[in-house]
Image (cartoon, rainbow, N blue to C red; front, side, top):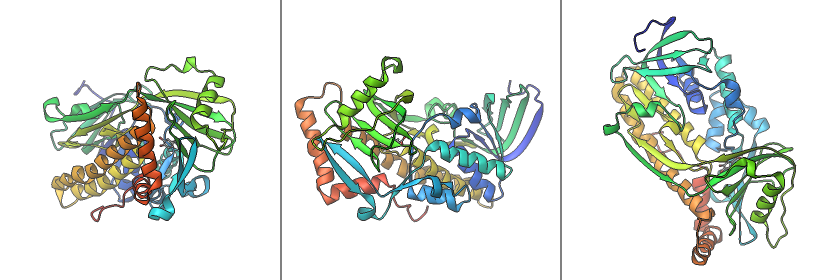
Length: 403
Ligand code: DHB
């Protein structure tokens, strides 16, 4: 396969495997600096656009979308949230990010970030091939790596590049190319999953609600005035077919119920998915001429909305080091990538793990466990240090001087 004839051969400084937000934002940043890319994805554009993902962007990430010229749609269609609500013990506690740390977040679904990026690539004449198959990344231990693939129409192609970026998500095949004996995988599984729904209903609250209850966790988020996104903790093996609309609403209502009489506004459930999650990091993030970015190198549980933000930070650093590596500095410039990216990755791993443990009910939790958890939640909302800690982590960390 590696040397079988192909229909076309293209040369480009950087080939990118994966056209999610990480791959497309990297291509956008490189394109602005005059560096060409070809981006490939096995999924069609429509598949990516219609797969529900997270919804919260750090203010820095939102700013970068506008300031790098991707799109300013977020300023019109997104919603700035200056805080969030933690609910536990049947009561609401607002954490006011803006007052505590001077930052806010933006509710703007990842699917919209993807649409903006894909449109920007099209507008700027960037090359993105969706719906490809048989992708093979070759010769990454040389200075002339190649990527071969079959296009949607069945034709065969080869890309010759100086660098290949693996931005191919949490089921990355690129990360498997780092030899087994030279890579380390760190990870943790969780004994629960999230049941995610889209419902045609009015908004139940102006901001997000992260709810802890003895029955388990729930997250109340939003999409538009008329469509809401919500999640609740379920077993990892749960099947969506076992859940009628009535059962879903009963479960969600029980998890947010409280002495204030709060109730969610209900409506038809139009989509339901079980989302399994885990914590994962692979090191190294670079092997020869191949570099990993975003979920391909690390995944976090969704509690705390770090995943997309982390991927966007990776590619900001990666665009910078790739430009230097392709210029006078040469390949040594890439050595700075992993340490700069990993500092934030492990901070986010800790925060996502911490927030998951803070809010979920572990199967078999004892009365002691539940009360201890309420004590921890009370420490978070009831002390300025606790509220500030949560705000600082949730809104993203200030970029260090080198970023
Ligand atoms: C959403 C998802 C998250 O994991 C989160 O922490 C906040 C919001 C969402 O889909 O809106």
